[in-house]
Each structure stands twice: as C-alpha cells, then as structure tokens.
Amino acid sequence: MRRFVTILAVVAVMLLPPAFAEEPEAVRQDPLEAEIARQVVDAPEGLRRFYAARESRPAWGERQQVAAFAEALETLESDGLDPRDYRADRLVAEHRRLQEANAGPAEQARFELATSTLLLTALRHLQRGRLDPRTVDPQWEIPVEPARLDFEAISRAVDGQRFEQAFGEARPAYAPYERLRSGLARYRNIERVGGWAPLPGEPRVLRRGDVDDVVALLRSRLAMEGELEVMAADPGAFPGAELDTSDPRRFDAALEAAVRRFQRRHLLEADGIVGPQTRAALNVPVAVRIDQIRLNLERARWLLHGLPEAFVLVDIAGYQLSYFRPNGELWRTRIVVGRPYRRTPSLRSEITHMTVNPTWTIPPTILREDVLPQVRRDLGYLWRERLQVLSPSGAPLDPWQVDWNNPGNIMLRQAPGPQNALGQVAIRFPNDHLVYLHDTPAQGLFAREQRAFSSGCIRVQGVLEFAQLLFDDTGSGQDIGALIEAGQTRNVSLARRMPVILHYWTVHPGEEGQLVFRPDIYERDDALLRALNRPLAI
Image 1: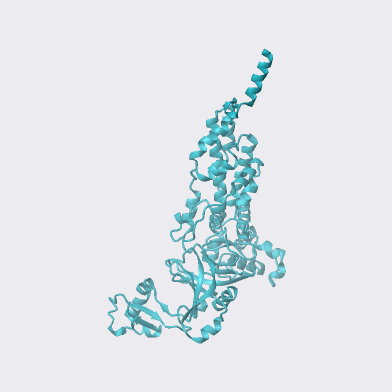
Image 2: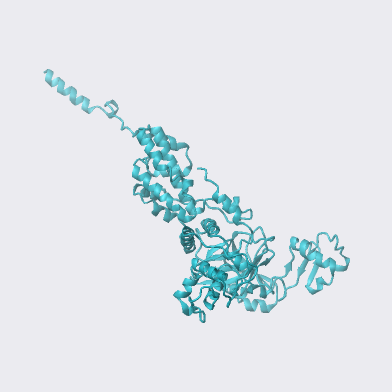
C-alpha cells in the first residue's frame, strides 16, 4: 500500500503545472561577453552595431587575429595614411601583455572595444576621408555624408582574418583612386633609391642643340619619372625624336620631346625648352611630390563615392570639364576658372536650366573693384561695353546724372550678344556663390596651359556643343542653335536635372594614366597637408 501511495505521489508531481515545477539552472553568459555587452552600451553607434552583429562575441581573443589586423593596418600607407595613427605598431604588444598578465574581463573588454574602434575608424577613413573637408577648405559646399559600413560583413571579415579585403571594399571603387595609389607607390620607390638631383639654378635656359654636363643631369632626371622610357617603348609616337645615347650631354630631339611631355604633365607651356618655370618644376623634391599625391588621395576619398551614372565634373585646378554622359561616353573640354583672389568654389549641385542670349548684371564685387574705377576715368567705357545703368528696381538711369564717386545702389547690365561677358549661353545650377558655367568672347584664353582668369564662374570651350548634349541627354527637345538664332533672352529648363560637381585636384591621373601635377593656384595644399600630418586622436 505504501509503495502504491509513493507511486501516486511521484505521478502527481509530474503532472503539476509548470509554475509548481523546479526551474532549470540559467545558462551562464561568458564573463568576457557579458563585460563587452556592459561596456558597449555607452559606446558610439558604430561600435554598438558591430558588437550587435557579433552578439557581443569577442573579436580579438586570438593572437593571430590581432597580428593579422596589425599587418593589414601597415598597408594603409599605400593610401597615403599613416599606420601609426591606428597604433599598428602597438596592438600585438598590448595583446600579449594582457594574455601574460591573465587580465580580467573588464580590461580585456576595453582592449576589445579599443581595437574594434581602430578597425572601424580605418574603414571610415578609407571610405570618406580622414579629415572633414569643411575644416580645411572654408569654401567647401559638397555635402559630407557619413560612411556606410556593413557591420555583419565586417564581422565576418574579422573572423576570417580578411582585413585587406575589408579595406579594399571600403576604398573608393573608381579608377582615378587606384591610379593615385599606384602613383604613390611609384614615387615612393623613386625616393627609396635616392630621388633625383636638382638642376643647378643657372639663369640660362637649356634647349635643343646644347651640349653641357647639366643636360646629362636633365636626361637622368627625366628618366627617373619614365619620360625617356615612354619614348623608348613607343618611338613611333615621337617622330623625328630618335634616341641618341652616344653623348648624354647633348640636348637632342629625343630629350626635347621628353621635356615637352614633362611640361604637359605639369601644365606648363610645352615648348621643349628648360626655362625658369620648367626648371622649378623639375627641382621639386620627390618627397614633396609624394605629399601632393597623399593629400589628393584624401580629396579623392571626400568625393569619389555615390557618384551618379551621368554627371558633370569640373576639375578646377586642372582647368578641365568632363561630362560623363548617360550612354557611357565621356566628353571633355578646357575651361577657365577664377583667379586666386576670386576663387571658384568646391560644390555639388544640379544643372536646372540655361539662359540663352543672356544679359549680364555685373556682380557687386566686380562692379566695385573692377568696373567703377574704369567708369570714373572714362564714362565712354559704358558705351564701349554696352552697359546700361539701372536703378535697384530695374528702371533705366541717365549715366550723366549719376555721381560716380558715390553712385549708391545702382546696377550695370550688359546687353546680350556675342560680345557679352557670358557669351551666348549660361548654364545654371543653384549655389550660394552664384557661380555658373558659360560661354565667353575671350576664346584665346583657352589656348593657355594655366587658365585662372575669371571672377569665379567657369568659362567653357565648346559650350554650345556641351549645351546641346545636355538638351539631348535629358530629353529636353531643344535646339541650342535655333534658340540663339531667335535672339531673345530666355531661360530654358532641362527636362531632367543633371548633377554637377566642382572639385579641386592638384594631382590627378592623366588620360594615359600618368600623374599630372598642377600648380596649387588657390594655395590649399599646405593647410590640407598640415591637417593630414597631424597625429590622429582616437
């Protein structure tokens, strides 16, 4: 009987509802994971998302993991970044110290979060740049977008020790960036073998036919950058410039062609003569060229992301406009940009419309600094330049009734026509600087190699062809020639807006892939280089 009662009691307990049953022992969380979860709560969003993707699992527990990451950080030198900024030289030693000291979860978690911060920082810098462009360029108007990181993919890359792959995916996926990286590697190799010797600062020029020890030095200097190698590889491209190695002291046709090539790569007049400007460019140390490439890699990281399929790129320091058309074709032309004291700004906008047969209302700065002094000397300047004097409301004024020493709030407007400062068409896009692309009667300036002559707006060679391409590619159904022929001043909208970017590069890959070094006309390089060289605080 007792045995029967005992069995019944056991069965009764088994049938009790869950609330009366004994709860299983809680699954214990790993102490380090628990500490990571605790510390990451107050961390920046990116770090929280990275460890959320890992469910708080540690990323840097194994020595080989940390060693592989430190090794990958050293490769950032190829992007013009300093691996020391990311503590590449201290990570392995710090990890070893923690292991040998048998550090507790709190200290290990701090190392975890600090090392992951370095990884995410490096990825952001590769994708969007190490610096905020607004801190080094007061005229910067291109929106600064935050980096877009795939935290789950980054987590998998960490587990698989695929750090260089992660870095490669973060870099701008555009050919100019890779060409700048290749150029940086090449010039660093030149530096490793000792660089080039400067040409003596003699006042006389060097030209074809000269025989001098300096010519031999010039030949060696050009060979360092491959100018003579290019000619040897493709002699047919340089007719009449056969290489003559019998006397390196002789300035022969081949050397002249190499000098011209060098001059074109530095936006100098390509006359084949080594005068003061060419000599100065030849004597720039290789270390300076390396720094120029580094800071233009930074500029590339600011710009080369999220570019639309079709857009207009205005290369300010290179005096070039490139139109990447929707059909994949590339249309390029020369431009004239703002003088150093009236700089063309960096900005991103969209072309909305064109003004055909435009009038030109002289901007206040140009009126005050350029035009009024001319009018005060000779009132006939108004008639020669076809300028109409207007009140603030637009009513015509008699020039003889204006006190030109104190003219007040007047406007001067130039009538439309081929001699109008804007030519026959102006291409408009919204911006705070009121700059735009336009035609010009001063076509001779396009023949110059360095073309900073405007008051901030951009003059475009072949602008009528460019305008027609914009009309065609946006489905606007307009004929620019017919619009001009009609003679009326009118605004004509594009059926679809066309993105436009104005950017400043002092080094950029040329059409043949070689690096083109441009004068820093707006003196922006020094401030950017100082900021780029400043130690990083993480």
